[in-house]
Amino acid sequence: AFSCRGRYFCPSCHAKRVALFASRLEAEVLADVPQRQYVFTIPKLLRLHFRFDRRLLGLLSICAYQSILEMMRQVVSEPEAVPGMVASIQTYGDQAANWHPHVHAIVSDGVFLPDGSFRALPPPDGEQLMLLFPHKLMRQLLELDKITAATVEILDRFRHPGFSAFQGQPIEPNDTVGREKLAVYIYHPPVALERIDYQQ
Picture 1 (tube, rainbow, N blue to C red):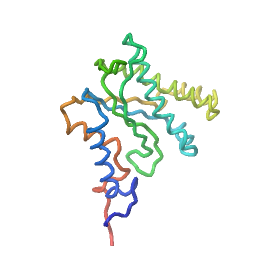
Picture 2: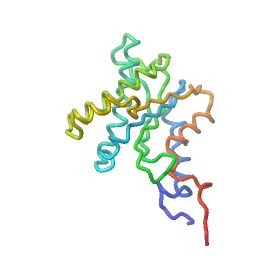
Picture 3: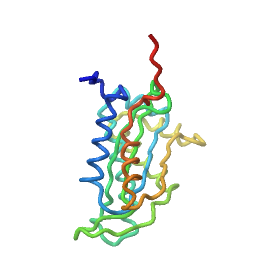
Picture 4: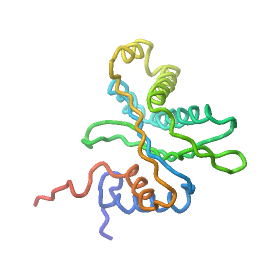
């Protein structure tokens, strides 16, 4: 009765949705295996393409997953092994008004085999992951004619092109609080309630 129903922006209305999302992940989605947070970001030079063609946002999570999948499969002999991953695309950073599309993800610390068993693995090498993710993303953008070879050359010349692939600390299966906190974090609203002042 007291909801403005302005979800995705109003932090008060969004809070219930976040709580339900976190509860469902813990109860129905996340397997009882170690999980880890990943964050994939892209440079400012590419962000406008995703702002004016929102269908491209799905490419971010696809390329992030394919990068992790490829690196994990390199260390197991089973070609059908897959990691578990829940991804959330956020389009805001510390300043909610800035357009900053990036991926927050919860990823299993290992792969699931066709027989249903789980094989724990060390996390993929961070530097290699940071190279593989932009390679896959820019290849897709080139195929869609969203960028040109000149754009790729410009980014290659940058000392810090703006791509990143952050890996968090592992969260064990019995750490229910930690898993729910991570689920809340990847789905949090752009503006925190405590940062809003109401002035009459």
